[in-house]
Length: 36
Length: 132
Image 1 (cartoon, rainbow over the protein chains, first blue to last red):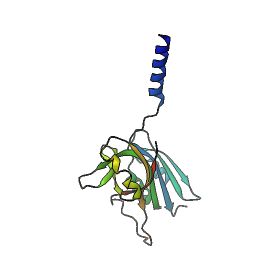
Image 2: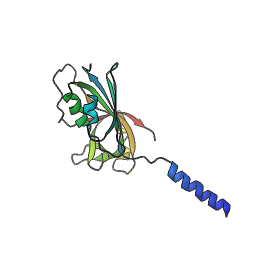
Image 3: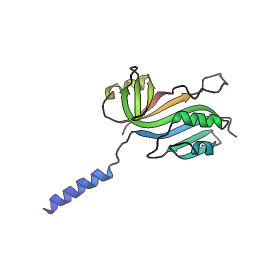
Image 4: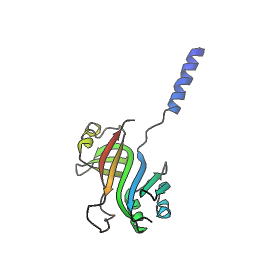
């Protein structure tokens, strides 16, 4: 029983820890000229 | 220019490197950033943009004209300019799989001093497909 609970706890932990890939612009980089 | 860019919607942070003329823009997590607006804001501040690169995650979709696009929001997508790397994305077309790519959205035309037209639709030239 304890092992089952432990396994469920680990599974739940993984669901929350694994970062979810979301559709979005993550970064923009520009190279500019004429900046002083 | 930094203040100009930071005022744009969806912008979390702007880092400017005077030495190499590099501007790094970090979007807000939940905001919608519009690269064309960043181009315009940069020109408005009196600085010329040579290149604009973007890293984004999204779905590969086919638009009404049959072009492949990277859709990053339901109302925001970028037409993908065909190249060798974009061919590799064909298998993801119209699937729900998200892909992260680095691509060039704008490059100043060689030999022209005239300001780029901010209203011209930006095409995404895929430079790198990131594995995630």
